[in-house]
Amino acid sequence: MGKRVILLFSDLGLGGVQTKLISLANGLVRRHVPCVVLLQTKKGFSRAGELDRRVQVICPVDIEIFGKHPFWGWRFRAFIVMVLIFLQPRSIFVSLAPISTSLLKIFNYIAPWMLKRVIVNEDTYPSLYYGDKHAGRASIHDVKTWYSKAKAVIAVSKSTYDDLSKNLNISSPPLVYISNWVTTRHKFPNRTAKRTIDLVYAGRLARQKQPGVLAGVLHGVLQKHPRASIRIYADGPMKGEFIRALVRLGIAQKIEWYDPVVNIDHVLKRAKCLLFTSQFEGMPFVGLEAMASGAVVAGFDVPGLRDIVEDNKTGILAVSQEVLSSKVVTLLHDSRTRNRLARNAARRVRDEFSEKNRNRLIAILLEQ
Image 1 (spheres, rainbow, N blue to C red):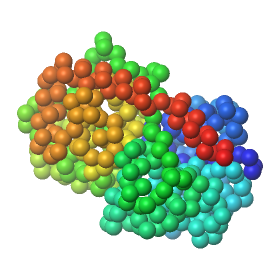
Image 2 (image 1 turned 60 degrees about the vertical axis):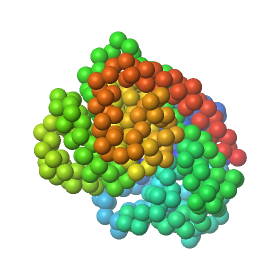
Image 3 (image 1 turned 90 degrees about the horizontal axis):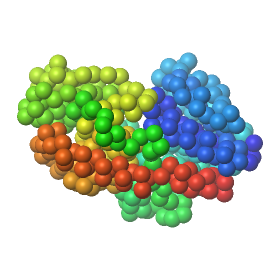
């Protein structure tokens, strides 16, 4: 086992997570790097059949049998740490902030030597994400301590890299910049495709995503474009609050609501615009997918989004709720501008966010 690398992922119900896992695992075994995927749960892993047969999948105890009570969650993660110590892998690649920080915390207490084998894929804007005292996350001080001891910390955007460097004082090494990516082989805008969905929102309804602001933006759009077709693919801890805001604004009946989907490609290929109202992003995977599929990304001028979108060139950025609503309405009515932005965005994704290059760089880190 000592020559193998471990990939540890959670929240497999998110389509982007499955895509990253499958792409990285398959890329590693094609480079003849023995690879083990360690899962918290197999629930929601609908694309497991896409894994190369040489990839070993381990799910020692399915966390779903314990439910979501924190009593079991922490004990399960401690058990995962014990499994990792037993396996003694060369490297451990951890994606998604909640599990990566809890893993590092446990390692720091019971097996600090294992920290030097952990590669963290940091896909948030850390000083804001960990600085939110109301969210019950790890503190910035703890994250700085753990990250400084890790084998590597991958920043998925230049904004994330700058934040880790300037605000958390993480130096290089272990800090490296390897951009997020998207597969473009089966995407790229189809000019003849009929785009019947005006506006799509896809993501978690949590504090970072500002669901109250999202409701306000949708209200502003519908005031100026009452017949706009709007779809929401979302869930999360603030879903109830968001629905109440839609009802209060009188637009709940005008929104088409769907549960989150693993593969949203078929939606994005029919959409004119993908909306973000986040306070910050790492580098939004669904945003890259939208750009590769010909849907224009619109959101606020915040870290993460500004790494992939240049206002009026590859998408839309705004400084306020009112301005964002107005820009979206203009975009929906102006097909020439929309097509120009979509072409530019797809070209940028193809040229700058390469799946092959990202996997090669991560593989080098994992093999060290």
